[in-house]
Length: 533
Image (cartoon, rainbow, N blue to C red; front, side, top):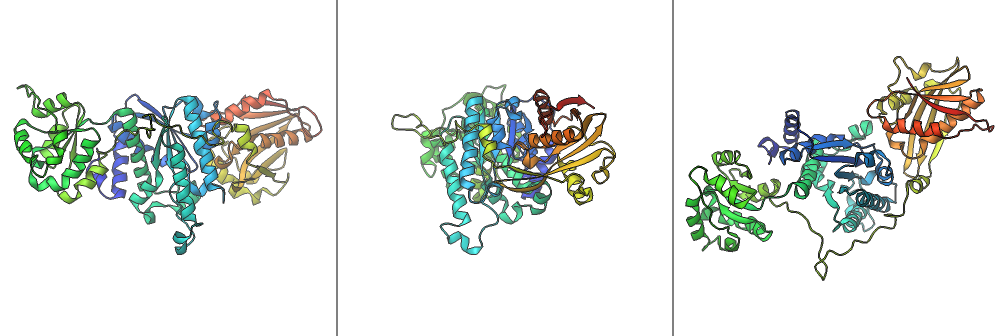
């Protein structure tokens, strides 16, 4: 459960989790969790790791390529498929969908993710996108065709499409934004620089929500609620009765923390606590060599201790199978504290049909038919190359920025002293590529540095920006390199590789390119070789 600091302001809570993460002991992972998003989702990692570790579900968290949900779900040889995670988190954002096609594209992503989970036997956590922050002004809320209405309808379509599926859990980014407050949730400057749309507080709430879902799936949930003796009074009946009734109806048994409190509680059940009587657990023995809390846990199995007494909560911390929920000093806030503590988190079963079985979920049109090649072909990608000999000063700042940010598709680290502004002439050429597709105009999407010597075109720098990866840009750029090399009289192109730990996509691309036959515009064969630096 959360510490006191984690129940404080969102900023303090997020900071407390980051601090706790640094102190987590090393432990072998229990779950492998892959993350795919249309934005930079890396900041969620500590907020997912800490609560999962608290639940004895120590995770290995691997962030997939940026904005590659569809390719990674469709490609069973891709990075995510090779990772073979126990859990795949897929988190699209409304704002990253093509204008006017937001709902259709979100449904395609959901279908592809669900189909991938089926094929790979993976638990899918699909994160419903938050409502867009920038809408159509004050009147948008009243427009049936407004942005808010369209996003709300799309979110419900997604929920209907995914509900009841055995491999799917649904989280909601809108809940995280709402918990933090819309004015504090978004980070436009960080999004412009690093495609991180949310503040740390939102990632904290999102990570916590996903972790709570995974706990119900993989970690089990408590089977009993144990009331501390300090709560068994008529004064607290009004505030606790309804939450405890909900737990009883959900299948949890109710008990009291010590035998001496049982009789007073039985008497109380004749009054304000009467609706709880059907859910009261039977008596249990309390051997002399164990305390009453250990006896409760041994008899009832995994349980929650509900108390406002810090000493009793501390005692429960040393009892296996017993987890304390320490309530604050204001009883009127207790129901909200129980909600925040995850007390009501229960496994979600499928919606029963007339015969008691979960009804089938209608698949999307693209769920089982869309291939990776179909996806790339449907993007309508357009690549415009800079003119050979073009003044590199004009593209220098953008090229430097792309080279600094690109991590997944790079041949290796940028060589020391490499300066795009000076890479021209004397048998050298800087190739740049602007990219656009039906999602929008990405501007500069690829940079390659070509050196020509002794009939060989040597390429040490070939970087593709994350937003355009997996869209068919890479072979188009290499095709242009081959064309230029052929015109320069080169019989071979050498791609100079250095593994970085993150550039596996580029290394695989180079290996596959080596096996292909490449020709320049004049029909001359140009060999492509992958060599180590």
